[in-house]
Image 1 (spheres, rainbow, N blue to C red):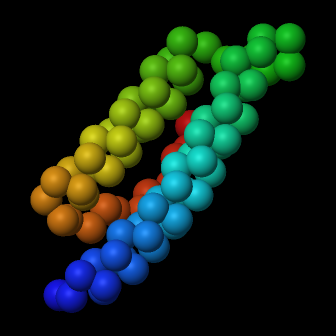
Image 2: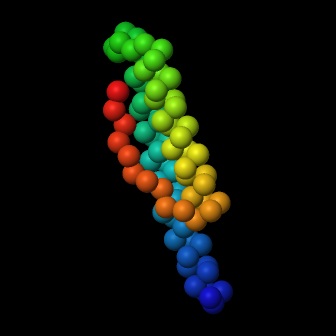
Length: 78
């Protein structure tokens, strides 16, 4: 692979990954607003379930970058 091609791929990664990480951070900030008990009713089981699925997804993300495996898309439901 040529050095120019590596530079293009690197810049593309930085651009795309940067935007996607910011999107995830913004979504987590939005989710944290659900912790307001004045507006929402939840119990410890709900929190544990949310945290578990988020940790599992981050673990899959880490594995994708270390082993080049494809992550699976799944849907969260209570």
